[in-house]
Every structure is written in C-alpha cells, then in structure tokens.
Length: 143
Image 1 (cartoon, rainbow, N blue to C red):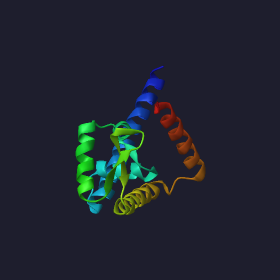
Image 2 (cartoon, rainbow, N blue to C red):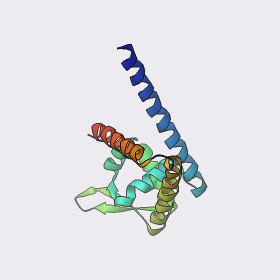
Image 3 (tube, one colour):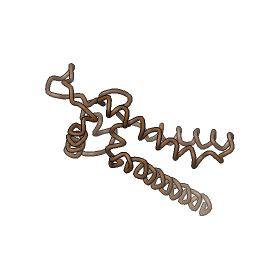
Image 4 (cartoon, rainbow, N blue to C red):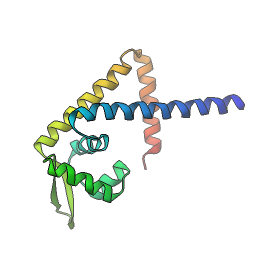
C-alpha cells in the first residue's frame, strides 16, 4: 500500500510541476506581446466568440471585480469591446476586436509552438497516452 501512496504522491507532484511549467511558458509568451498571462488567457478564451462576464469569471476562476478591471484595460487598448447582451439588457457580452483577435492568435500560436517544442521528442504512442490521460483528467474536473 505504501508503494501506491508514493506513486500517487509522485503523480500529483509531477502534475503540479507541469502546471507551473505551462504557466511559466504562458507568461514568457504573453510578456513580449505586451500582455499579462491573465490578459492573454482572456483573449484566447474569447477566440471562440463573445461571452458574458459571469461565464468569463467562471472560466478564468477570477472574481468579477478583477475581471472588470482586466476588461477595462483591454478595452482601452481596443482589444476587446463590450456589447449589449440580447438576452439580458442588464448584462453585456465581451468580444474581441479585430486587433484583439489578431493578438489572441499570436499568443495562441506562440504558446502552442513552445509546448509543441517541449513534446516533439515524444514517441507517437507516448503522445497518445499523454493525450488520453489529460482528456480524462480534464473531463473529471469539468463540472
């Protein structure tokens, strides 16, 4: 039983280290583009289309007040725009401007290139195992 516990601890520790590596890569790719990692994340989330503040707050795991400040800063840079929510006149949808979409693609491409470079030496069978494991973890964590 002790071996399983040590193995579980090693897995958790490895996943936490991986999370930090990926966060560092996100910071390294967003900084040269004049964005914080959180701003880059928001732009990339919006690539799928406009979202309301409540949904964005949930997806990004940040308080609405922090999100509002971030949206304000990105709006001043003409990277996002607020639009009335047709389903709720008290709410707004946040969407990318043309400049925001261009920058979001730059961030996404830079980040995926860095991650791809880290995984390029994985054999195809290892890639499929990693992909399957990550999908299971994400599915289990998704409400």
